[in-house]
Image (cartoon, rainbow, N blue to C red; front, side, top):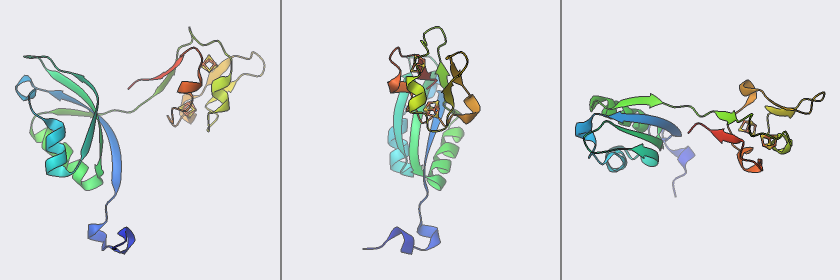
Length: 149
Ligand code: SF4
Ligand code: SF4
């Protein structure tokens, strides 16, 4: 068996995951994007969300998984097909109207982005410390935490 680490550099794969939002011109709405990405670039495409209606511009949020070079080639190919691509970044949001400041989410946050203010016992969220691991989402008893994607 050949170990990945014994392969010459040019054969090594660096697998990455990217979320992208695609906007299609209406003439491409029928294109089987996920199939083409898998067949031509060996990139797996998980469809997170799709808004496609006949005779309209289509929008799709995809999570792409593949070798970094293949993935870049796939993005270049889509751009060449006049598909607009925006690389999307996930963010956590806390609904302050819903949060009851129970503090449960602070117990699972690995970066202390979520803490309770010692003086007020109110939840404090420091976005710059958040690594979007999403561990806090299922802990919230009132579904006050969500992501934008
Ligand atoms: S997503 Fe992770 S890092 Fe960000 S607030 Fe929630 S638990 Fe903390
Ligand atoms: S678990 Fe939910 S309700 Fe409790 S402090 Fe965190 S966000 Fe607020």
